[in-house]
Image 1 (cartoon, rainbow, N blue to C red):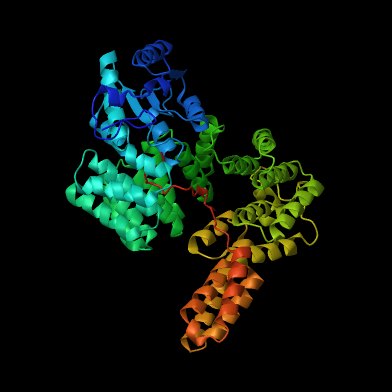
Image 2 (image 1 turned 60 degrees about the horizontal axis):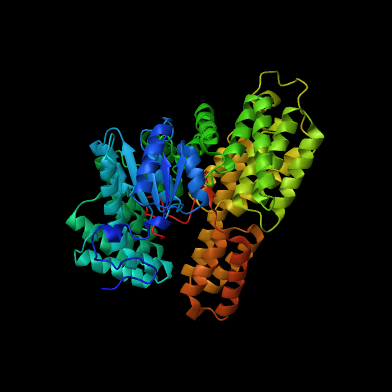
Length: 578
């Protein structure tokens, strides 16, 4: 069979020529803290014909390098110079966030390839382990085998490159069901694509076929994710809890369970789950951020600072770093009365905003941190100006949940929130000379809390976050609970109209209340009722148009719930782009 025009061999042609074809054009990265070991591996790769070899000593530096440019081969020392960040953590994070193409060969070097390490590597799709010391021929053998495997699936990667997703799925399923070489890997890729395309029944079937063949953890986790995507939350939770009980060191399963717990409003449970995930992978940047943020909302400030400070130290220059980490640190430093460290966090936020001048989110964080500094320095006028600016921004239609929640966090720290001495968490008497409440501030705060509550009390998870943000402000917390009951009452009253045979009245009421409150739950319920009873509604098209217009204005996705950043890749999934 002739070769491809670009020089790559067709699948099914084993041998050294296939595995090393075009290797002179490949780029390799060697990650090892020992300069001598780095140089030796780099020389071995060059002897194998690799055209471009880059050497880096620190895993954190390698992560940033890989975020910026493509790489064909990564050889990483798993026994790194930092207990906080391992080569395994690096691979997990890059795969999870789609920053490393699956076609890249990843070889891990380690002093001891224990069973646990091998299993963990298999779940993350490490291509090979090499136990030190190793020979140049051993490295060559592993590289050849890995590249053969990649070439065997080249038709799948070509289909992905050409955006022919249906074709890629068919190729994956055929390879698995015909039990061709690398059948399980093909099944994993195919199931991931099916999930991404929302073909949930087929994805579930494929995962179940794999489980019937072998009870692989990744397949069981995939089945859980398919259940979640289909809205079968209770079944998914039972499945993921059973998996974690059986495979307690499966960190990706902890991710899925924690996200499910957040969605169900169980912030305490999600906090405990992410604690476990951080213990399993102490150098994973995202898990550190998630656990630290949940610790903040669970009123565990010491733990939150420890984890968030580690996040800044390990990855503030990474693409995976979330500026929310610095905002929470600023709030915690304010609570401690530590003006010096509050200024450090404010400065880091300002530098990030300078690098990303178009980011309204970063500008908002900088303004909020400056409000905290003004409060700490008893500069009441400056603090009020900053708060007014943030509130005006929120009053715009594009005001989002994160901005609303930030306002609550700031207003809860005003002196009248819980007494002047308690508000900032600093020693002193209530009658000292700290910032005094301004006339009318309490009324403004009450109006703001009601505005936020009516708009964003759309689910248990979001309401729990809002309540956590106002923990130190009893009146605000009570107001939010009333808003939640009020929204639920509106929804129940509308459904009563629909059940009594008055669906048009139900839709019209929901649309009126949805426009007034900007509450996405009411607006989306109006559209749902209209579609369900369209045969009984005289002017259904007009009502659906109104609902769609309100949805485009006020029903934007909420991407940060308790700091859990939702990305294009579901937690526990496999990176499939080539």
